[in-house]
Amino acid sequence: MAGASAWQLAVVCACASSGVCALAQAAQAGPSANTEQASQSLAQVEVAMSGDVARDPVLFERIRSLFPPQTAVVLRDDHELDRGAVLLPKHADTVYIWIRVTERTQARVYLALTEQGGQTRYLFREVKLESGLDEVGGETLAEVAHSSARALWSREQQSTRQAVVAALERETEPAGAPPPAAPPATAAPIVPPTPRAADSPSSESSGRGRLEPRPLRLGVGASGTLHSSGAEGWLSELGVLLAFEFGGRFSLRTAVRYLVPSSFDLPPARVHLNGASGELRAGWLSNDATRMRLRVEAGLGLLLGRAQAEIVAAQPMAHALDAQGFQRSYALAAATFEWPLGPAWVAAGADLRVPLRTTSYEVGGQSGASTTPALCPGGSLEVGIGFDPALK
Image (cartoon, rainbow, N blue to C red; front, side):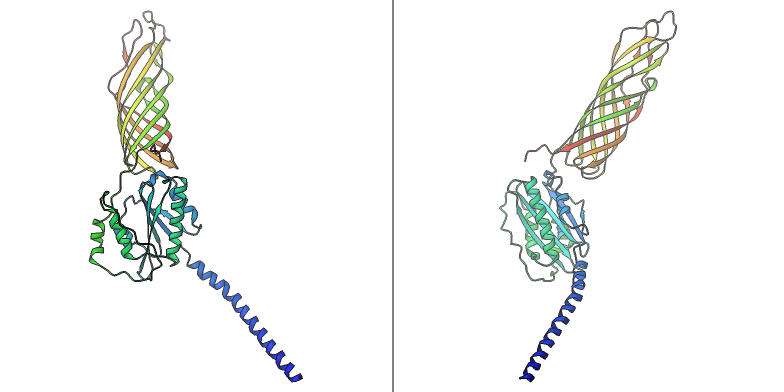
């Protein structure tokens, strides 16, 4: 009996020792496993958006906020869906996302990832936006882009190359053609892509989708100008502006300003000026409103002024006449740098006015004196906010 008890005690001790060793090994392996998993976390995501995405100007910020700080999320300046770029990503270990809003209630999301060994994996999603690309639709689309990137990176889901090619071909079909049903995104086995003649870079570039024209963008703001005007000195104007942008590259702007009262000497008199001006400008923009850009403009303007003279030097024959009104039309050329602040902007620029007629100030008993120079250089500063006028 004693021998049996000793045997049982030995078995219990051996089991306890094995359990302690297993726990120690798990504790040592835990940090290593976590370190390995962290080292394989998603490091780079590049996003390109096209179509009717301007209806949610903060869509990219919604997507970036869903990723952790250690993941670099970059917005690419690609406003066209490039078939070659989708099928042949440039860099390895970077998840590329293309978001294309084809209609107000329909969006397509393409994802591609090339691994270090040269193998490329894809994922394609179609998203139904019940209420369009409003705040709810933007949040929904951002969640789909984020979850799809994580699923492709972790190999949880992917689409076949053939499914992605079929979806890209539908991008170039005529609007009247009924689109075929899209294959669902499934966790298909990982198969290296088979090179085909139809997927060569030249054929892919020729089959890229075309970007619809960007919607009209309106802008309202305040502006101030300062110009040299010969004997009149420096004339300052403050006012408001209204801007129209077409296709992200052309603009039409109008402004109405108040001429800040000023005075200048025109012996034997001192002349006091006030008035107002209006301008119409047409311009070219170096890019859309999401990044810093250059604006080059030309236009016409009209200054409606009123001058009141007073005699300041003793002249027997001189006496001040009543206030005089004048109209001075001018042509202008301007170059302006614009910095975006979300939907708002701040801009500073230089411009040159060319008066199309001169202005003479008359004092009783004296001959008129022309004071308008041939060129009036100056600059401007403006702030404003832009928005899409189309109703959702």
